[in-house]
Length: 209
Image (cartoon, helix red, strand yellow):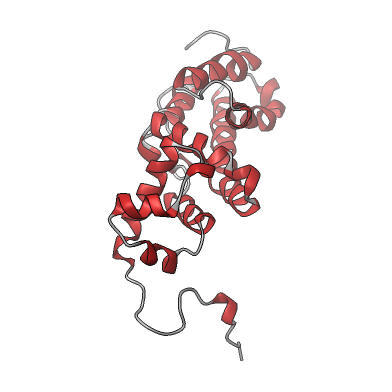
């Protein structure tokens, strides 16, 4: 018979149950604040003020900032293109459709959120793992599948098939490097440049098509 594990219980053991009706708003506001500032400067107090919730309510639900941000990352889910690849007629158009996805509010808000989370990957192993599994690895898989499909269609020469696993890492790796370096922002133009000047150039498609 399976025994109860007290450590697996969330929330208080007695008293009123948590009201989860405001969770979505609170987690969305958490991402909004991450789009405005980095993880180190985010506070639960600020989330409480912006959401109109008492600080005690948030602290009963999420004991620390790490718990709150971890919940926000997981609630956002994975890039929708992982379940439905774009199919716009060319590998370039498909790759840029991933860049222009409406996920997390579109490319500008999404890039700002990722910038806000960059410092979290250095200070929290749990957040780093969540971002890797929920964001980075799914993007690598999306790019891998798009590039393999282009090989299968003959748009990319078959001799480049062995390079696809490495090339699928390029966009996430270069954007992560820029975010972590704290240098220039990761803009749409940056992604377009990586797609055109690195990924497509590497497979002989060095002209926008």
